[in-house]
Length: 267
Image (cartoon, rainbow, N blue to C red):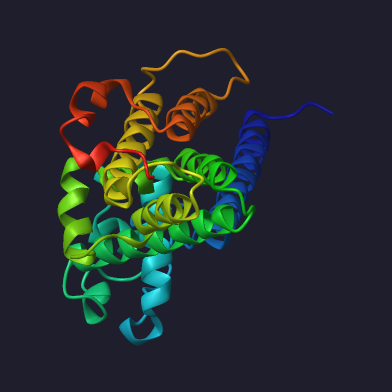
């Protein structure tokens, strides 16, 4: 049966209407999926971006959480990256919230320095207790200091860099406890006769060893020391110090020893 032009036009219109309805349905379904996934509006266009998590209330924060966040930022991104804004972003709170627990950023940095000093001192005390022989103790202490700096590069830089030094001196107006470990060990070695130097020399010996360790660490952290993989750069220094301390002689002081009792071996 022949189809009239009017019937053909109606059929075409019906097909177009059906396809248009199908497209509209797909658009609505897609919009609903996007709305559920992103929290957007029904059209699927999220004008405000992904839904934000509500900020933490100021009272829900603790000092320990803030210190942990600051420590993580320093370790992961460096000393320069530390800021109250980064702490707030990490904890999901307002920038003002940490100020409810700390007066300013410097107070947080000082606590990081003090915590680092406690950890370093604990490591050195454990090294000191690992032997009763003073030379083995000095070896273990030097390696303990080296290992601490290697595992906590940014924290060590905060503690002992030029800028961090100001915080360090404010935190420890007297001698830092980690340095006292060197002092005590050398003083005991002299008192026992294992280190044949005058008792008056122990501060100079401790300062020299501490300065050597610090210089070695800083040079290594800045990639300025080249040594074979698996080599022990601390050991060569310890071997030299051990020879000098056991002999009671220091080439740099030989010409002064006859006139300066400070460098006379113990009698």
